[in-house]
Image 1 (spheres, one colour):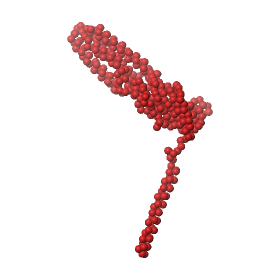
Image 2 (cartoon, rainbow, N blue to C red):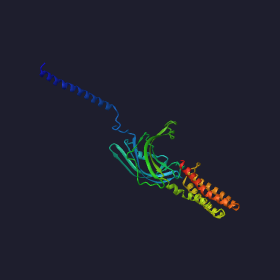
Image 3 (tube, helix red, strand yellow):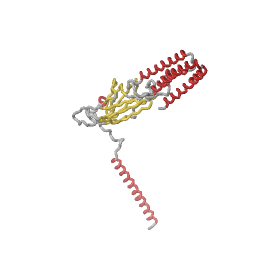
Image 4 (spheres, rainbow, N blue to C red):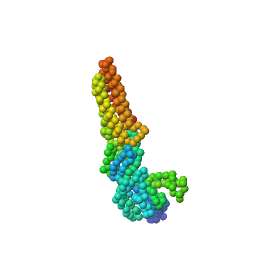
Length: 339
């Protein structure tokens, strides 16, 4: 074989080897493409016909009544769906509440998707946990269920991306915290009297939940609310610094303390629902009343003792004047921070 033949042979083999590699690459690409066609693509898949996107924009929280166990909300709600037989704006209901007013309905078609948006004012009932009042935090929930008269089983999907809360919302005594939204399915063990279905039928309804936190901002509201109660306790302590022989002045301060404490108790009764358990407010009120009662008994004893032993009585009064506030303060700190 000549040198030329060797060069020619080499020139022929290089293209053949390269061609084989290209064929493997091409075969691999075809295989990957075929595999991709067999694999479901969640982003490209069209939503099911009975799927309904739901979102909320919270405009305001006009009122929160702990005593009446309810709150009012002002919000915009929107739906997006494909099935023309559905009308979620008309079929939705507020779980554990009712709609006070609706206005500003907007309905339109965006391609093959139906869109509806409306402003809603509603009243919702909730059993608030007031055990820590007035250091209580709450989670307000707007829960939407779909009662479709056509009987189609719809599925809610939370429009998390567009759901939001107005930064202008103010709720006296609280600050608006985090919010969240999610979809779920709720089951009811009843056929709602529909004789066309079995009695033991379990009715399932789609539910959309929008939840927003109400949080107490520090101890400002606590001291504002219990300032009169703390004043009552302070006057009781001051009474021990007055001479035991001035029993009328001491009792005047004690009586004033009693009525100030009663005012706080009346305020608790006016703002909170009836409960068999003792909350933070109840414990502070009872603690102050116990302090006033014990002080009254001790002052009567000191008044009688002063006639027999004035010096000892004065020493005991000074001891109570310092000791009782410390015990009361320690008890208040324990009650407040134990939770």
